[in-house]
Image 1 (cartoon, rainbow, N blue to C red):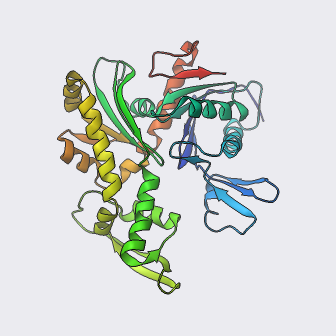
Image 2: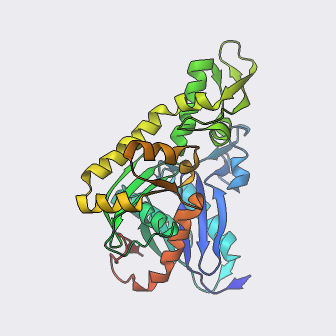
Image 3: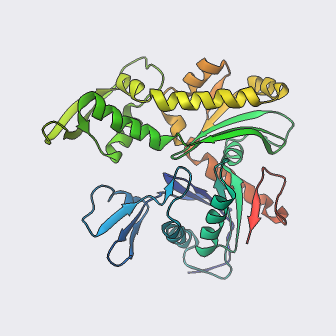
Length: 343
């Protein structure tokens, strides 16, 4: 298929990659997983098909996540994964290579930025621009960040939680911590091992988080049956796990996120804190969908907190909407955040 170049926005997440094509919206949402043949180095599957192989592959096939804690941990695999996704959304051969905006955590280093940009160029982009995740999340959530008015965004992704206060299209105060969805899964695995002497896999932990996970006491307790391997006998074991147990399992990562939110508020100028008190806190990202997170943040801060309408795709939507100002990105920095253009 032959096409002209498309401007593309990419939410390059630890857990998922979302791709926004200008004029079409979010057209791809796939897990950040690749499966390769170790003997030949051949790429076998990408995205959902590769995720289905996690923990289930024979010796010669390995399914890996090329991004960890919001940044690239395997450059070659990230490049190949991006190339596959870009090929999928452009439909094949394009007359011109696309311009691409990729969102990155607010605490990313220059070396990590360069790795993201180089991966994008090698994957087939003509030019790559970077935008900070909390800024993209705020735009995607429908906040008017151009005004001299303070807005606070808490974006809980797969590898990082980005917390930022935004005013006049820029980040006034922010922090990026490596505590997010993956750490919630790890907390479940550790809890099951410690409390029940049962080993569960990553996908089972993810399922438990989605179905019964909560960080604020529920009005009505829920439970599911979980299958794992008993560490005492080595045999399969089935347990009934309740949402109340998830409260206990999540205690440590939740406290770290709450401390980070408190820290950002402490460092924010008082005028902007007053704005945030009026405007409220907006939560985005898949992690914000854990039951009761908005209630917990509101109870700890005393500030009204809401979860954005489409929390998972907020960052991708915001990245896509910022494509409208790509034409103004002619030098190292532009008005929006500290967005960067690199060739």
